[in-house]
Image (cartoon, rainbow, N blue to C red; front, side, top):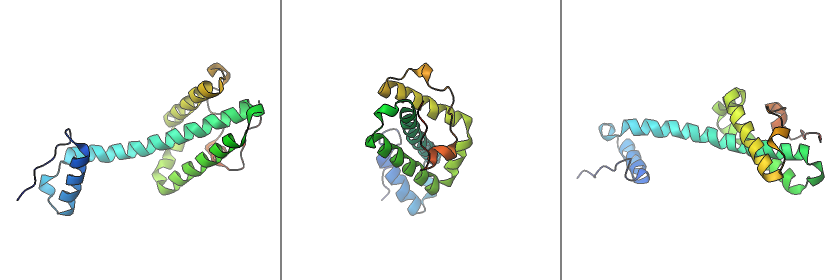
Length: 150
């Protein structure tokens, strides 16, 4: 008996489970190749977005650390350390993501998000923050790097 094929547009989770079963069973003629390809591409984009989000949080906390030295505390320090660990772990587990660290568009997005978050959370005017990231990726990810106060 042939199982009814799930549609991608109706229930993506049921569809994904079914596609996995079809792959494992070697029923390649029944696969939804176009949607499988889209999902694989989306997986890569999702990994990049996660890295970008973590980097934006890290950058925002480094900005706050630099611009509000009087408010520095264990919470900010813990967030900086945690995000560094998570970014470095993601880069180790998915080495192809390291290319993002040399992509100007990726940096512009991460930096822009960090500036917005810093403005929103710390009340520092957007125009008072550098237009471009003043630190290298090596500095940002180094456990020894802590920006000097402004």
